[in-house]
Image (cartoon, rainbow, N blue to C red; front, side):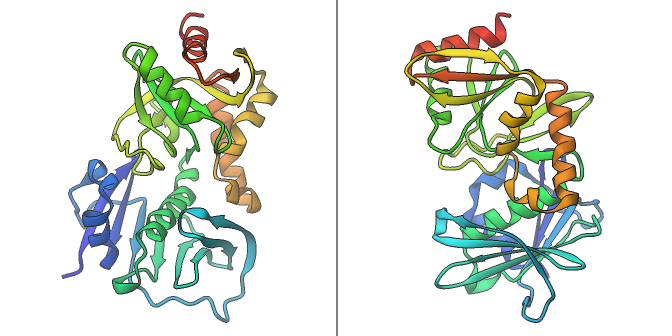
Length: 295
């Protein structure tokens, strides 16, 4: 009997079929809170068939972009053929290939399976493929650290090393009731007319895998400074603040880029966006809290 496991993230149901299913259930604990009963009759937004014989040799493809996958000292290449989006993840020892049909069916295939499975490759490959599906449902992952306070979410954005995790830690240490929802890759979407932040199985180096969702009170882009200062951004600057934190590879495909821009438009049309110049201290956390919640 072929093994399979089902998950729901940001209201999107996806299924992993074949040998990677066991990897998800036994070696990727972040997915456990998002597990639902596997039911072959349930409609899935994405189905990942693992252990497939895949090769892109001889396939006419256009390379869209390539980027480093530093977690495993590997290189990722994002390509597009007539029928598929293709992601390859390659290091000195192995290559994983993921393909997603371009017909919006959510059909994903990967050669990952058996002895050749790299958990980091599989986890990232599924994240990437889920985002291809998600943006076409007006949902997207946002590179951010998210705090929940007063039953609402606040998203902190910034380049790696800017201090997102430090700032959300300062909230937890100094703001009563503040808790962490996700520290790297929450999802954002519209639910019942509200822009909502969803926890996810992808949380970077901080194991914070909460199957919870909250309306977003504010989005804050951080930058390091010798002082603490915060201001609200106008719409055009809000686009510039949020866009770099959405899946950057999708900017190289017109269809995916349009879908990302639709998500971005929905978010900035409903949620205030701020820029916080700050020191890594408690006063910065208090300033951002008071600016957001005491207006």
